[in-house]
Amino acid sequence: MGETYEDVLRLHPDRIPTAFDHWVRRFGIEKDLRYSVCYTAATWSKYASPAQAPEEHRVLALMELSLGCLYPDDYPYVDFEDLFDDYCRNFDGVEPHNPRPVIRAHAAYLGLLRALNRPMEHFVDIRKKLMAEYAYRNRVSRGEITTSFEKYKESRYTTSYQVAWFEFWIMVENVRLTEAERKADLLVTALRSSTAFNFMADELHSYDRDMANGIPNLVALYCEEQRVTPSQAAEVLAEQMDGYRRAADDATARLDAPDMSPGLRRSGQLLQLFMAAATPSRSENPERYAYFTG
Image (cartoon, rainbow, N blue to C red; front, side, top):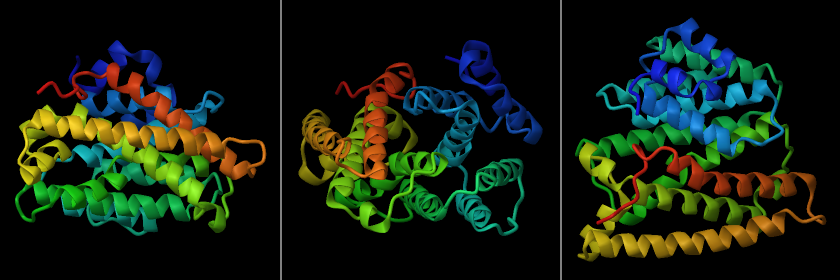
């Protein structure tokens, strides 16, 4: 395992497009995109990006995952609320309070997205929610507030960034979903169950890391509330994860049917791709995702 952005380039040059590297160096954010951030983003992007996606979309996807999701996801410093506020100011096109390099790089990335001339309302909305939930988790981690299994589970529907990734590709591919389609029971079920499948697996693969870093984890919260051992809690979460997988498999298969609208059918295909990407993305990144062993 490496430690730096340069290590990712050295060990996995095929996963870092030249245009992405130019963007990183232009804003001087090599130290911010350390190995655990950049490699995780590059690996997920490799498996969870559509096969037919053009190079420019893959570059945007890597910017999105690395700086848009994983960097704030892992941000450990006390000024987290200031950082997240400046992310939101970027979303609104407002001058940030502290235009640090990562914020300027993020603003430039959003400029590239806006140049695509796609509807961005849903893309922006989920990212503002993402920043709010990152702040919530930081406050829990610092002992400022408490949480519960159900509260934190609900938060994970946002912080797993499955929905954010979905909205990214819906926007970039210019998939037009009507508001009625977005509210359709089948799509809601597919998106929610595939997201739960993803974050339940993340919780099981992140237990040791979360405990070491003082981050909330559903396994630990279930232990505390139900007074069971970590192994028993992990068993319950694994059963729930399998149920979510079955529900997502059924819903996405029904969405990807010839009688569905183009938007709903593409939604089903994207969610199927994201679910299939989960296993190889984690298995190639054992330093970040080590399955719970008790």
